[in-house]
Length: 419
Image (cartoon, rainbow, N blue to C red; front, side, top):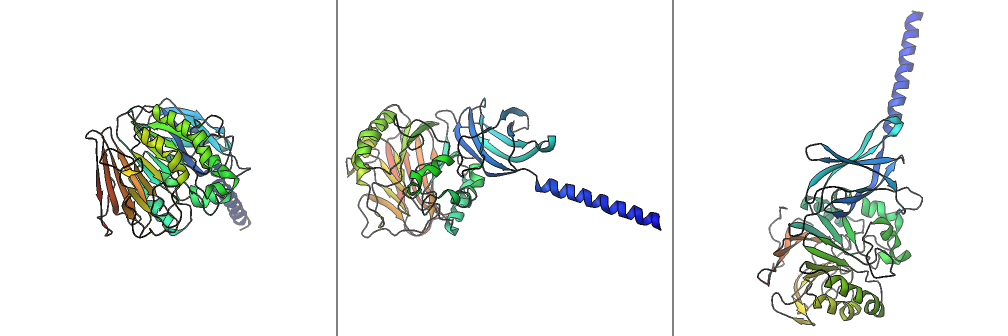
């Protein structure tokens, strides 16, 4: 009897030790958070940023679609992080083929072993002339149900990348709100598709937008002497994208930004030219007046180089202008189209009545985002509501040099299935 009790006691103790070891192992299993975040997507590779708990050295393993290992890339501690005192890891992945799908793994090595802490897919940037898709959202960072609705729709559109027109975090761009109002809602999106953001007025209220600049890895090619990330540009496929921090006054735009923008657009050649800044210059929204400082300083440069589209936010609705040049509505293919897509998740604003003659389409009845398909011959734009329906469609055909507006009425269109 005594022997049986001893055996039972030993079994119980062994089981307790095993459970404690297992539970401790589960508790300590590496977990990636505030990422992974793909950035600076290029034909030959990309940047990747993340945090991991418990904090430890990791590496990135890239695999082809058939599972073959393409390469292993060491991680390094980033020089900045959204939340002070927290370690952010970063890796530069290079040596890939353009326009190709890959899988990547973030691998940690606790207790001498190896653990895959995260695994996702990514598609490298296409060669010039090859088709791609990008999305545009603005004024998203409310933390409300509307933001989550839009955020859930975005990955299903499989964008190559996303532009954000500013106001990522409201009310004031607070660092401590980034985990709940940016990283979590867009976790599935940013793990495969980079988000490129410009600064909104709410982002600018704390530290002049430094929390946003500490979050993103943005091109460092703005005006000479200016802080990197406030103004930037990049080429993707057959298009050039240019972003401007609109939180400045007219003399600054005239003397600093306009000369830089002139050089950037002059160097774009025959690429599509698309600009992004927060404050709109053509709008019928009732919350803020149009940004005259930009209208007088940057719009002449934009129209000089025949930019096809200018995206803004700030007004929490959707608006599309007619083609405009020199302050006048012009014929198809003769001007720039200005898009306000500021309904990404915050409370909606109403448009003023009567509608401005510059505005060709307006929807202020639901939150929405913009999807643009790009080929060498055309830009095809769709505005998608939070219910998944098309709110507006528009196409620019460079081969025929004509723009074909197809605005829909205020009634809802058919539900859209991403192609």
